[in-house]
Image: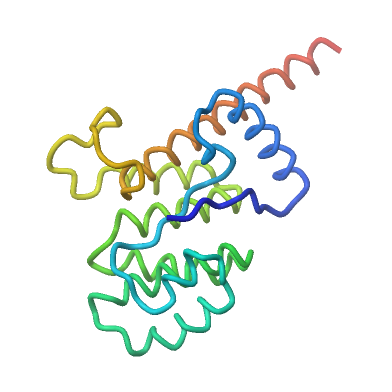
Length: 188
C-alpha cells in the first residue's frame, strides 16, 4: 500500500488542498490523513516491489516491459503499477490511460477504481473521485461492507472508504468556504 503525499499542480488547487489537509489533519488520528492513499493489487508482478519501495522510474520501466508479457490475470496488476507510477511521477494524463485500462479488466476493480479516484482528486475533480471511491467501496460487496466492518485497514475496501471520507470532507469544506466567500462579498 502507498500513501501519496499531496502532489498537485496549480496554485489555487494547491492552496485549497493544503488548507483542507491542514484542517483535516487536525481531526485525523492516522498519518494517512496527509494525502490520498494509492493501492497496489494483491497480485505481485515485476514492478510491484519497486512501486512499493519508491523506485518509481524503475517500476515504470519494468512494468512497461512486463505489460506485453503478463498473463491475463496479472495484467491488471501491471496496469495499476503503471497508473500509480505515473501519478507519482505527476504525469496525470498518462496515468489516466493506465487507470482506465485497469478498470476495464475483469478483476481487482476495487483497487483500480480507488487509484483512478486518487488521480481524479489530484486533477481537481473531487466529485468524480468520490464516484470512483464509492464504486471501489461497494464492488463485489456481498456481506458487511460498512465502515464499521472489522477488516484490516490496508485492504482495498477500507482504503477506498478512507479516500471517500477525505473527498467528502474536501467537497464540504469547499462548499462551506464558497458560502463564506459569498457572504463576505455580500457584506462588503
